[in-house]
Length: 153
Image (cartoon, rainbow, N blue to C red; front, side):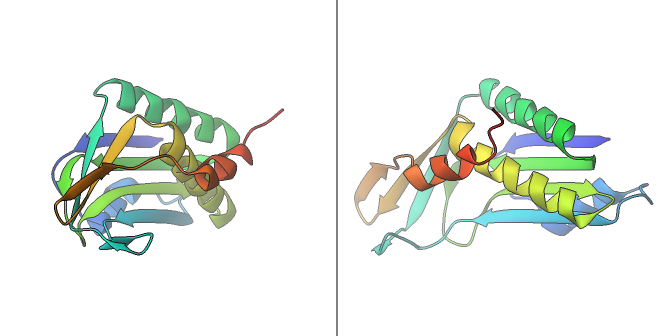
């Protein structure tokens, strides 16, 4: 299985990343890709930029742990997780999750699972710029609720 986890400042090409994920695999029937993009507003306020910070080493390990969990839960043939850090402006790619499987159901479920856990568990912090003001973004309870549905008792 192909697994790629990268944290980087540079932009990425979603199409090229999907091509790498699929290369040499004739058993893949579906690739589901989610791309997060920096937008120019949040909660009704203009956002001019945001800066993403992470805990190097720990962030990669945490992402890898959740990828391993996804691999155990769904019949995946490949996973790509790329997350940028540094200062981003509206329109910039922030991150992508791509999951490959023989069938779409597994690819969709695994991608959604990984997104929910990345949003709540990966050690990233977001500083939004709104004009001259800067504010650290708090976690959202709606993201925590989304993650709860994946917990197995």
